[in-house]
Image (cartoon, rainbow, N blue to C red):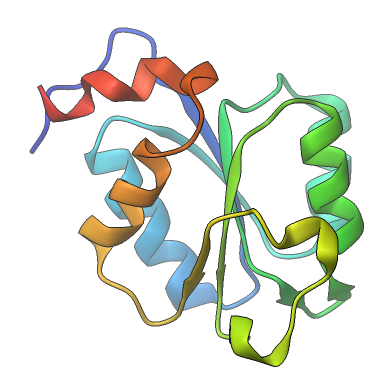
Length: 132
């Protein structure tokens, strides 16, 4: 287990498949993150309006209430770095506004997911100490 941070970075997980969401949440908590998990774009928007801004996010692309393109744009407007973690293959085409976003296809190992999070822009520097 990694050294836990005194101030845990908050990661918003937007995932509509319960087992995947629980697995990501448990792993990130073990790695020292505070995690907020929601299952739809509507829940994600509501949480974002009522809570402190997360330091980063993991976003499934195709959710029960539609593609996450507009929510991804909101994350960008707020300066929240994120990765897309989806069963939707990038090869099928993604909206142009998501072309530069790290796109991870399910299934993917936990360490690969953590590495992708740690590779996000420097504004998330608090997670850099997770590997120490």
